[in-house]
Image (cartoon, rainbow, N blue to C red; front, side, top):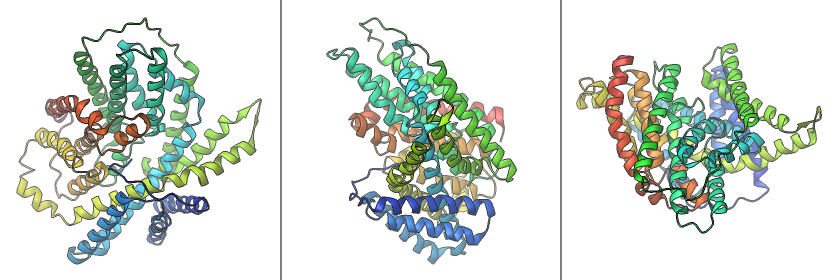
Amino acid sequence: MTDGAATPAAAPRPQDDRLMGLLLILAMATELLARMTGAFSVQVVAWLAMAAVVIGARRRIGLREGYLLTLCAGLSLAVWATAPDPGAELGAALSQASFLMAFVLLLGLLHEAASTSPSIDALGRYLSRQPAGRRFYALFGGTGVMAVLFNVGVVSFLVPLIQRGIRSAAPDDPLNPIRERRQVSALLRGFAWCVIWSPTAVAPLALMELIPGVDRRLWIFIGMGVFVLFMVLGATEDALRFRAYKPRAKQVKPVFPGHAAAMFGLACAWLFALSITVSQLLDDTIIFGLMAVCPVMLIGWIIVQNHAAGRVDWPVVGGRLRQIGFGSLPHSARVAVTLACSGFIGRAASSLVPAQAVADRLGLEMMPDFALLSAIPPAIMAMSLLGLSPIMTAVFFGSFFGSLAVMPANATLVALSISMGWSLSMFLSPFSTVVLLIDRVGGYAPRVLTWKWNLAYGLVSILAMVPLFALLVALVGP
C-alpha cells in the first residue's frame, strides 16, 4: 500500500501491457529466488528486474513517481558521498525496494482472485446492510477481516455497495448523507487499524525486515486486542456524535451468508497453512512463505471458482490467468514503482542519519518506554500531513530503531507503535492512498473525509495510546 497525491499519467499503449506484465512477473520471480537462495548474484538480477520495471513503466508514471525517483537519485548521491560503506548502504536500500515491489505485486494477486469470488461479494453485501445498532461494528470489523485477502480492494468494493444500498432504500431521505458518513467512516477506520494485526499487511512485514527481535505472534495477538479497543472507541465516538439521529424506517436484519463466510474462512486457513508449511520446509520466515504461496493461491482460487459438475473449465481458467497477468497486473506498475521508491528512500535516508548520536541527543534511553511509544504514532502521522508516504516514514523509523546498539523499548512494541502511526496516517492524512481511493470511487473530498469526519476520533485515539502503552509496557516488559 502506498500513499500520496498523484497526477494522472499518460495512458500506456495496449501493446505495452504484455511486456509490462512480463517484467512485473520477472520482478516477483527473481526476488523470490533471491530470498530463497540468499545468493548475491541473484539479488543483483532482482535489482535489474526492478530497474526494468521502472523503465518499462515510464509511460504510466506521473508527477508523484517522477518526484520520488528524483529523490531516490539525490539520496543515492548523498549516500555515495558521505556513507562509510556506500555500497552496502545502497545495496540494503535496493533490497528493501525490490522486496516491497515484489511483495505488493504478489499480494495483489490475492486481490485479483478475491475480486471475482461470489463469497466475497455475499459478505460485502451482508456487511453493508446491517441494522444501525450493529452497522459500525460490522463495517469496522468486517472490513479489517476482509482486507486480509482483499487488501485495499475491499474499499473500492464496499464503498459503492454502501452508496447503492442507502440510495435504493430511501432515495429522497434527507438523512442519507449522515448514513453515508457513518458507514464510510466505519469502513475507513476498520481498514486503517487492521494494519496493526493483519498477517498480510505491508507495515508489519516491512518492519520485520528492519527491527531485530520482533515477536510477530505476540504482535498479532496484541494488535487484535488493540484493534477491538479502537473499534469500541470508534463506535462510542460515532454514537455520541450522532446521538440525536433516529432511524425512520423499520430495518430488516439480513440473513448471515454462512456458506460464503465458511468459504472465506477456508481460503484464509489455506493461505496461512501453505505459508507456514513453505516457511518451515525452506527454513525461512513466514514473510517469505506468504510471498511464495500467493501465486499458488491465485491459481487454486481461480480453479475453484471455475469448477462445476465435477470438472474444471480449463479454457476459462487459462483466459482468466492471462487476463490477470497481461491485463490487470500492468495496472499495478505505478503502485509498485511508488512502493519501491518509498522503501528505497526510507532506508537510504536513515543511513544518512547518525541514529545512535540522535538517540543520545534526544535521550531516548532515558525516556519512559510508554512516553516514547506514545510519541511515535503522532510523529508519523504529522509527517504524512506533509505528503510523505507512511511506508516511507515507517521504513525510516524502522531503520532508525533497528540500527541502535540498544533498543530504547521492547522491539515488538516499537514495531507495533510504528504500525499504529501508519494507521493514524491512513484516516487522518488527505494524501493517504485509501482516502484518495474513496474519493475516486465515492466522491468524498479527502479533507472532509479526514479532518472533518475523523479528526475528533483521531485525537481521542492519540490520547488513548498513552495509557494503552503504559499497560502494554507493564505486561510485556522492556
